[in-house]
Image (cartoon, rainbow, N blue to C red; front, side):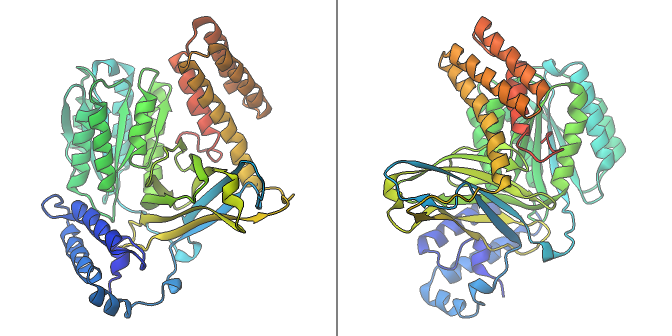
Length: 488
């Protein structure tokens, strides 16, 4: 029998309000008037049946008797938690504690089939792309077309101050015709990202399926003007439909804060392509990553206890990014060969350590597994520490120590950028010099040289160079990724 709670993405102790909200969200996404994807109408009817049963107390009670005990269900995802300290101490002062949460596929699931892709390339076609950028984009797109599997869907949208669907989404791959269309791309006009993003999302929605990896890859070399708010709303809508967005920025003139925020709405992040020759490698890496997706559309709902503040969140992998303090959090994907890792920073006030246990965070993790036809039950999340009178001398896990050491480098450059925006140029320059010293101790000589040059530039020009600022931001962020994964 179908598990109605899992179908709605809720726990068995859900309130009537939570049941109603879950049904509304599912109906919005799956209603036949808005979604014509094959198979989704049947799921919509199942969702209606689930709501009809669970929204009536008598029907719900009768249905609950047919279910196996909840503790007997085995999640396809396992969690590990690492803490910076073994316990919190009963002190009359504020304490800081870090928790590293990892989620990865359960190993005994057997060989997981790589899910088919439903991808749209949204390519900047404005005048600024003229020359080497466009030629490299064409070559990269043609290379990807030739590597597509028969079950994959690829669409291509170009945009400047208007959007054009260059290659419509289709299950029938005519590779020769697709390559011809790509070769005919000619840059012109300005940069309006919303036009291209909207068209790209529409193409993915044509063949949207929970059994596919549905994703938009946006590639641009320029800044968009006047349509930022519309673009953010489109990204939020994309996330609601279960469509991810990745941003790739070429050169120094694109707005990395904007592209990072845009991608984070759908659980991903932006990447910095310093030179046109690197475009193909970045696109190849992104496609390889999407082909290794085990679970997608991960959403974490969190609740902290009174007197405990969740002050910072950073996703370490698979797509490193400083996450906004939003609830729920869009986390993106889990890969078959790489966990999803989040680092949390908590500020704990004295009032939170009166009892014997401090609950730092409670919540639930929702996810979808493309290789499974049926929905998966959400995971309950609890992050807590015992409260003791004396601090434990046991050192934290080396995994956490390494993550914190590298995160400190990234946060130093973040603070330097904040100081520049506040007009504190000397403080920012000194902070960058301090960062360079730490980078040298980590063996990052090239990055340290770039940082020192920017520190000198700040003293002379009272501003970052765009190229240097991006190199420092994305360079220190890449240090948080596993070895060899610096391109994501």
